[in-house]
Image (tube, rainbow, N blue to C red; front, side):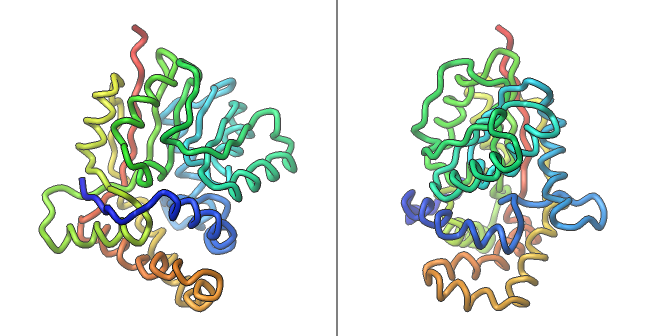
Length: 278
């Protein structure tokens, strides 16, 4: 695991409060990578990532799903609408919570979705509350990842599944590639990035059985190629500097994460784990 001690939780919260409109205009309703199978648009690729994770996790009608780090609520709404599950979304950002709730109401999904503004590392739920605990690209922001998986395992019903997509540090990195990962952590406000083996260990130690551990790097890397082109095309550095100068480091690291994927310094992982029935 590679750590970045300078990251603070209040900075993470502020980033998403300030940056939500930027994310929506710049990338779309999802705040996560796209999953490409051919030459799909970014919007289709983002939906495909949600759908593929849902297929692996077995999300279906009447599934009680907890979406940790739900962002603007796009994945929760999609699953509620197409799979008829009930989704509870958690975001650290008040702006995102209001956004998610408003859009769900406008789309007639208020009864199937609930959105909470809370810290994923301190929020509590009764034991065995959910069939699926789901998190796409949120665990990167958690300060105590092993503890989160222990708590998530407690929230799952017996037979329930954990579904995770996460940015990962690569294996056996030299100093140059370790620096690439550190720069990504600093620019994207990640207190640490674990390896694939770290995640498998944390999940297993929480009492869950890992069913799938997949490397999706090649399928998602195009995300940052598109983002890098859009930054330069629309002069987004100038806009970010006007809104909040502290956001500039975020934009400056877009090429860094793309290069980290290309060099093997980083990977993109998908994990599905099941809680034993007994």
